[in-house]
Length: 334
Image (cartoon, rainbow, N blue to C red; front, side):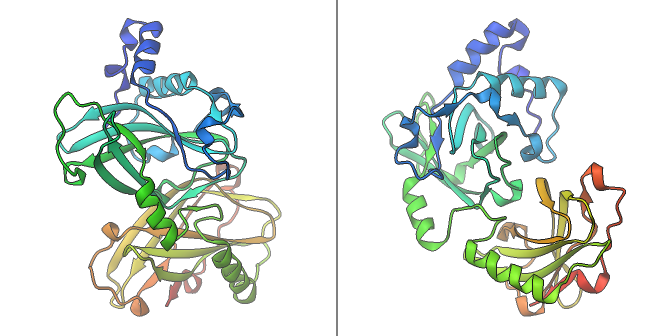
């Protein structure tokens, strides 16, 4: 789906008309509470929107025309200030599609650290607060939210997600689904600040990497070191990054494949990343989430499956460096 934003905001009638249209469509921003502040939306400690940079990696393979990019930047710059040290979701346009209800947003990370979102439970409500639709969105495939950035993102509620069909002229608002949030927080951490891993997981896997995968001078290696099932039926692949160079290495794309015992592909995922970097002579671990919907086959025996990493794309500043991925280190059999 191409965004074609010029058709939705009155760009052909001039910037002033576009500005009026933007503010007419804006909904209320809601916050995920990563700062620990109660009711962060009431905080006066805010950052102007223009202090965040626009990160388009979240759109993946979507076709963006030059006008789309310019309007996204224009819309972003028109947004009210964001609460400092928070992650905010700001719906700026809605539209009815044949397949469901589209909400276009900016996900704004006003913290000074990268944030990995796991599940994001959202709901559509009426102006009276009545819940019309519920859906939990998988966010790990976005590749994380870079610090001090705003990522345009679209959320589509399919018609099957609706609890009932409202009247045609009913205005719907997207909100944080607190009921679902409470359930998820009992089961697993919703916001993970450590590369898709909890603190305990990161500590365990880093020790494993130090013990089993020493740094090789002059080499950069990626190794899948674990494959685990998560509660929703998806999988998490743990990848170790070893940088034996004398300079920092940054990865912009990491492909992760899973195969069964006969070599059949179970999943082939490409994770676009903006700031996955490994400092000189250091190691790092990262958890890559693969949703159940991306897996071929419903009943998998993980003990017979293998996760591996083919060639990963490095940042342009380090592409000239040799990326040495030994075949016998690419996979891990649980």
